[in-house]
Length: 111
Image (cartoon, rainbow, N blue to C red; front, side, top):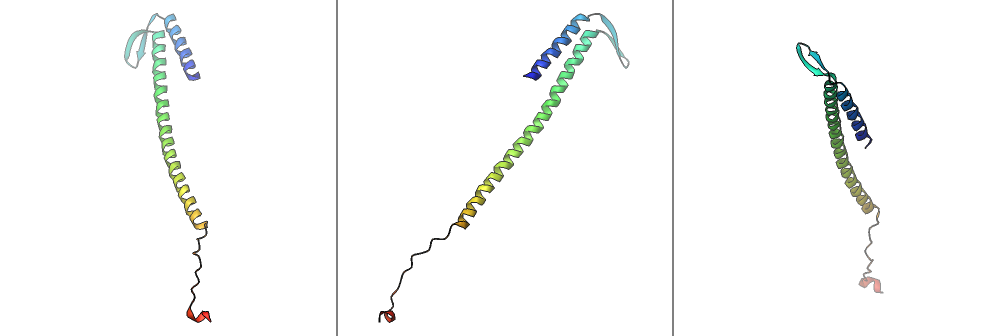
């Protein structure tokens, strides 16, 4: 929200500057020349700068999102491995249930 406020203030200042400087001036870029107002030039450069900033921020955000997705998948894998290891540990720690002892009486023991 704060970022949007700064953008609106920046664009408002650029628009006021562009409306205040409407006199046509010769503008040269290397060997190309044209007549343009300084305000329009400043407004155009500001808008191009904002677009460039948005694009670079968007690319960085895409990288962060892909890293977050990979990390979440890795966490899910590790959690499933942890559950499996806990189950194996529980199986190893529980004592085996002994079968009830049955006494077989043999004919020799009856005497």
